[in-house]
Image (cartoon, rainbow, N blue to C red; front, side, top):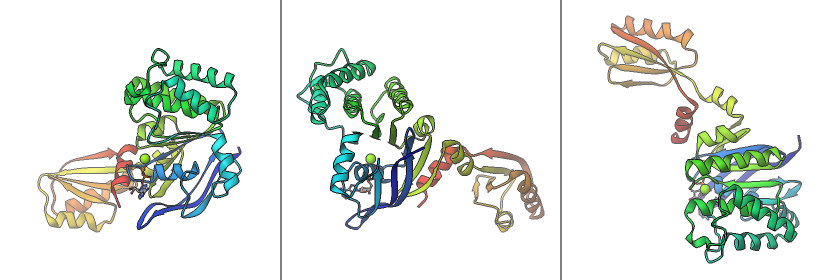
Length: 308
Ligand SMILES: Nc1ncnc2c1ncn2[C@@H]1O[C@H](COP(=O)(O)OP(=O)(O)O)[C@@H](O)[C@H]1O
Ligand SMILES: [Mg+2]
């Protein structure tokens, strides 16, 4: 598979704030890659650099053979990408149709393609009835959909989507996610920003977990494997410092106390649980129950996101 987006050591600093640091990743043609991270993680900054709206402080990126830092390259990139920015920025006084026609003409797309795509996408997104109303009268979700239609008006082969389902209700979210998957099936390359783990898992072939730096890049299945783990919860009649010390002395993983229950991160519960039980008993602890706790990818993600 051909690499469509090739990012090397990309860094952006705003004065003393490092927005993104040393990002390296590739997106292949026909792939949906998600950049998953909390607010302020650097998702929008990354996308703005890749769509040539913001120069990087250092590092480089090649989009479909063109360098983002080369003036000719960036002109070429702008023609072949479709962007849903984080701030949808439509003309409020114009109708959806007029907004889309305006952008289609800006790309110098053939009129027939513009009109066909306006109809196709407004119908698909359930906006056809409202098509002639000024966009200023639309809900946030409706505007979000028009922004996606606008990104598609010139049939771009690469899409940069910055939280495209952010303001949508569940039904519209499903419509948009299905559309994104169908665009991938047409062999388009998609970079999708999201803070929603479920969204990333559902539609992305690859996920980059971002928090200023890329913490991990992998398929959803691999991430699940490497991020999620196991814990054991040992409930005691009574817990004292001696027992806690005995458990911590085993150096198995993070150990926390909740009420009378000691919760320990274990790499391999089958192997490690007996040592935990032995250590507690030897320290004089009386065990009520021992339970294995599975940690979901969601729990693991929140831990990564919260930890500094
Ligand atoms: N133009 C700017 N000037 C100064 N700081 C900025 C600017 N744009 C973004 N930042 C900072 O960079 C960091 C990343 O922001 P952003 O890329 O918007 O994150 P995300 O899209 O993941 O929420 C934040 O700390 C933000 O405040
Ligand atoms: Mg953002």
